[in-house]
Length: 506
Length: 46
Image (cartoon, rainbow over all chains, first blue to last red; front, side, top):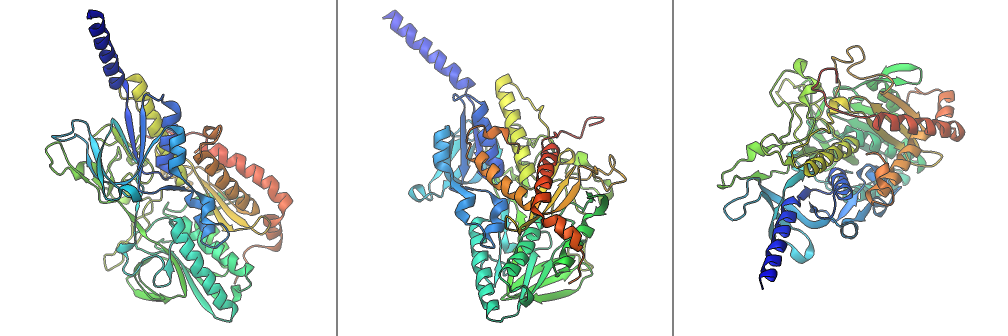
């Protein structure tokens, strides 16, 4: 009898020890950042630790290929796959739900920190659940803030988006319908660019306009179209990164000269410093940096909306609102948010570990973190409207920052103390933008641009516009298309966590 | 339309043989830049 009681106590003790050692990591979002973090955590942590992904999306999508879906050269099913079966196979928990509020101190009922999530899957729709965690990775990305521009709603007013695969499908339907009319003789006006004064992601719009132009040539209706680029950039080729000086063959040129060369060669007009503020059926209204209010007619438009945070709320253990300790639109991390003039901005302002300074077990890699400021120089119209791009954070930095956050969490768990040795500031990180300029194995084209660092470091590289030449270069040609296509297949392979997926860099 | 890319340059840009070698070169160069490391900026001489 005594032996049985002793064994029971011993068993209980070991169970407690295991539970104490076991960590639960909750990842919000299953985009590039969330999925990268989840896959690395699962691979490197043993199964006593729990990895749970909470995402309202049932599918993983490789967003960079939406461009090709938007011109009908790729099917949306080729760029996505369902998450649930993969996560089940790999031992990653998955909840198809959207998070609504954060309780980083727990509350009266729940001692551990938790988030409240509302299920969106058909079988549990509307049910809420408290999800406790030891570590939380907020990889929720941006909210596509269409409502910030009156009348901008994908698929209405002849204006479209390519931000998601469903948007891209709609855009393709709209484009193909227009091409059919053009084949019957219609003269068309096409407008592509940014749909808000503070929008970002000019790169995606840049790719789309070149792909649409090539598609019109392929379908032999190019002569019937007037194509216009409209953007909140001060100069072409700003891309929300303050432009760049790059090596192009044996020349050194500014990015605006390169993009200008491509647009002129393809007969694409441009309107710059334009903050689109209202969309009507076939009519886009915008304010320019010199304060004029203009409008442009179109038969087909693709306009990138502004991005915003998701409007999450946060509460302390007494249920007091502490949203400002966690969010500043996006999530607050280890950046320097002190307001400063453009001239005083430095790369040191940008975060290194993506850790929230108030709650050390919360991280926000990818697009979910609040940037300290824009990268492009802020500009205002005489009417006081700010018209300049918000900072872009594309797939590559999203993947890199997610991996370093995962590595820091893994090391902290293994060392049983906070471990933040993995760092990756956008001021000390390179990125490649392989922009498609047309689809086709022999007729395709791509503009390959790499930049180092992403955030210009004017102190370290004072004579080259803040970037390291050689590591910042541009190339145009068929090879760029092959490269983008190769990356499409490589990253989908990696995302599916097929053998040796982890050897492919982010 | 203003022709900003010469016929020779366009030939180089679209020639599959030349572009195959360019593809190899670009792949390696992009890999080196991207996998070439990243880090913080707040330590002296980062």
